[in-house]
Image (cartoon, protein in one colour):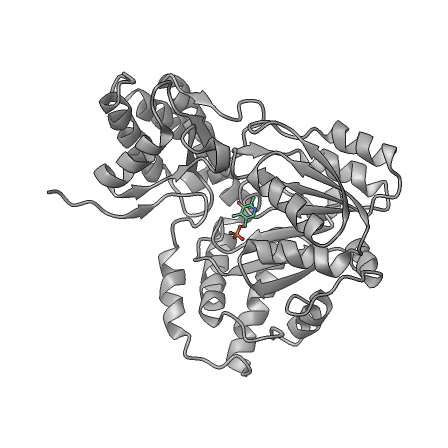
Length: 387
Ligand SMILES: *Cc1c(COP(=O)(O)O)cnc(C)c1O
């Protein structure tokens, strides 16, 4: 029996930033006091700053899906024509939500592992000029693919439709110029690159999106964007907030600001780059080879090995929790996360563990081959954040 430290290495929830965890202990605080308003105001202002937008930013006590739901129920109307990009399980969630609210969805579906192309979105908008909204994932966490939201945004901006981006794993892992690219709604979640536990969702809302919302006729109550904006301006949330998480977010945002959002993105990009090289050295194939994102790298399990075995052995041998595939990808792929509080030491250890697990299960690799690829990337990196 040896020591095994539990390590949470999934693409949400992600590893927690310790000072943020410690801040949660101060949550015996009332939310309708100036002490709390100070924290809440700082969170909203810092979110706006790290998201790099002049749009309004709102926050909800919910997982990320809450803000996805709120977007549809607050901004759209029954029967609205919308375009939904589906490249994985989270794209399917968009399709489910808009259908649940009775929107008329043109669903553009690509096989798992691929990305919807901006030209497909453009063509859908040309074919149906009355489209009110386009929905996409910046980063499709279930497959590891990233979408070109810049090109899509510029195409949508030329129309009356609003562009709704689930950036729950896009924020902090890829550049997102919300204002310049026409990203009307951008959604984030606390348990991804923001390094704190699940339970907070946030979103930016552009003037174009607010305008569409004026004619929205769908029922909603708990998630009320207008009410939440008014409350936020007064330093409060409409309902009782998740006080402990907001205290945590305040600390995490201070940290993100201290390293800089661009460097947080760079960090994820470097780890993803190193992981892709390492996978190649280990004779493994990337699941989303054509448009891999930096939030998570999905790797196809070698022939004859169920990815669940790799996941299980990470847990049993090294105490590490990594992600299997979701839905029909379960057993086929495993996913190595890079978003938020991940560093090169995490990656070196993960790759070393992976090499042991692969060898033990009949996929022969040379010990150190994958780790060496990541070490080379680290050694050649010039970014001061990484060193
Ligand atoms: C995690 C995630 C979500 C939100 O899921 P919740 O369980 O509601 O937090 C949505 N979209 C993507 C791309 C995600 O990675």
